[in-house]
Image 1 (tube, rainbow, N blue to C red):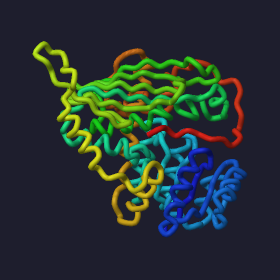
Image 2 (cartoon, rainbow, N blue to C red; image 1 turned 30 degrees about the vertical axis):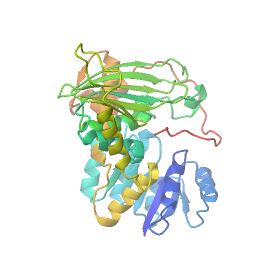
Image 3 (cartoon, rainbow, N blue to C red; image 1 turned 120 degrees about the vertical axis):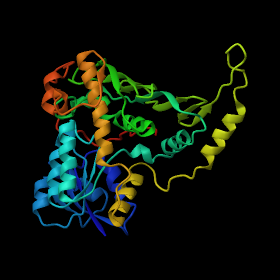
Image 4 (tube, rainbow, N blue to C red; image 1 turned 30 degrees about the horizontal axis):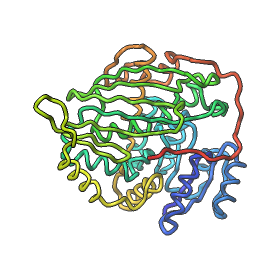
Length: 387
């Protein structure tokens, strides 16, 4: 039996609690932690976790002597590194919500702690556990469509003006950034996974067009160039009505997309496409896609099951700290390019001031100044993406 603790009982914690509760024979929620303990108590009642103990800090949890094997870090990004390192020092394994941390320095400190204390750390990127993305990756890797030459990544969300009223949101210090870091993190992980690595160069534009109670961007456009000459564009937004997220891979022989679609062209003698497309290849791609078995669990539940299996079998989780760091590195490059209004190169080295949170804060563009905030919102529905 794996004993788990949820640190941070805000909106996203529900996905973690429900995921763990899917496997009652394998794990048990032993503790709920929040700086507002009444929120943890409310979660305890809502999910009928009668045996779970409530704490008002992760320090109190770790000092209690309660047996905890797995800590789920579901707090604001600025606190991830400290909670993670303290928990690993206490011998706990981790599943850390996205983003891993706001800076590469913090990510590296977390990775060093994982090795030092001999524990296992997973980073949440639950969309890899969605059938649409898992199967898209399989289709791209099959080679049927040829190499990816151009990718279009749309991380399109919508959040009302009051979204940034919450005390930690909309600040570079506490949230670490806007949708580039906190929403597109999912889709940036996807393009890293599909491409198999980071780009060499990044250019970006950052803007805040709808949220004047936030220091950070609410919209960004990034252009990426890879070593093999392929390119990608990433739009990160909380201003798009409809939240129509998607990823399109323009490959040598066909277009592949999630939600799933494929189109393949074949040329006429004049270079224009034949009207009926390449139906033979399209059928082959559709048949291949349909032949891929569905994942047994999707989203957070799928990733939680993978982490439980890794702990039970002594293996690595599918999404590791190294994966989380790559995502943060690309996001850092997008911010650096946007702040400096120029193309930047990767990797970002330790000597680069953008390697640290202090350097990011020193250079961050404040689109507006946050003048007022609220401690908590009343409970309400949240959106976690359409794939």
